[in-house]
Every structure is written in C-alpha cells, then in structure tokens.
Amino acid sequence: MGVHAARRTPGFDYIGPHAYSITCCTFSRRSWFTETPKVDAVRSELIHSSEEDGFAVLAYCFMPDHVHLLLEGTSPTSDLPRLIARWKQKTGDAHRCATGAILWQGGFFDHVLRQEEDRHALVRYIIANPIRAGLVLDVREYRSGDPAYAPAKR
Image 1 (tube, one colour):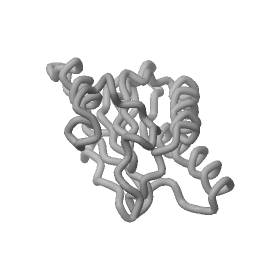
Image 2 (cartoon, helix red, strand yellow):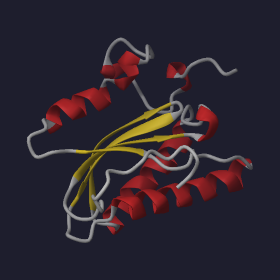
Image 3 (tube, rainbow, N blue to C red):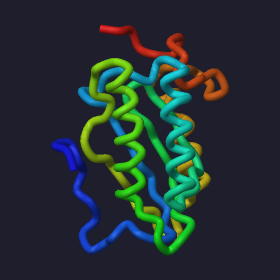
C-alpha cells in the first residue's frame, strides 16, 4: 500500500461476503473527476472489475478529487484489497498513458459495515456528498464529471 494508505482492521482479512464503505482519493487530491469521459471510464472499469472479482456496487459518488463507494462481496472468495488494487491499477495505467500523470493516491480508506448498520442511510450519505461539499443544493442537480460542479482549477 502507498504512503497514504489507511490501516486495515486488525485480524480481518477482507475476503468474503462483507459490505464496505470505501473512499479512494486522487494523487495530491487533484481534481481529475471533472470531465465526464474520465468519470465514465473509471466508473465503467469499476463495474467491470467488481463483476469479475465478485462484488456488487451498491452506491458510488465521484467527487472532483475522490470517489465514495459502497461495495458488497457476493461470494466467499470476494477479495476487497485485490479488487481495489486491480481497479486502481487499470484506471491508473490508462490515465497515465493519456495524461502522463498519476491518478490515484496510494491505498484507500475503508469501513467494514456491521450487520446492524443501516445501508440506506449510508447510501444517502454517499449520494449527498456534493451537497456537503457545496457543489449543489439538491443531489438531483449533480452530475459526476460535469465541470459546472467542480471547484475552480488552481
């Protein structure tokens, strides 16, 4: 894992039918997800990689410099670290070929959901990120990758 990797839960192997709240940040928190084609490519690879690795994507929200995910393993062999590593490698390689720049910060932040946790509340939290960030007043106004909802470039 990279320099910015969060510590994993001790004694938990992240394999099997578990649900996770995940946050992956862009390298140096650059606003790469302000263009619809870039978001579409990364989202498409997320869906593809998740299906290959036995995960359901329950919710996601691409913010300009990070992405929030709600993932759930669908088999006893669903391996979260493998999924995230493969997805970030594939999208990072494509991004580097297209731009010459690094897309992802090392590692990811996770929360393993307990059975009693309200997944609907977590989905609402993920979807409401653009409101909390001051990008929109109503979630129905937000379109990931639309430069109209991205902070000014520095």
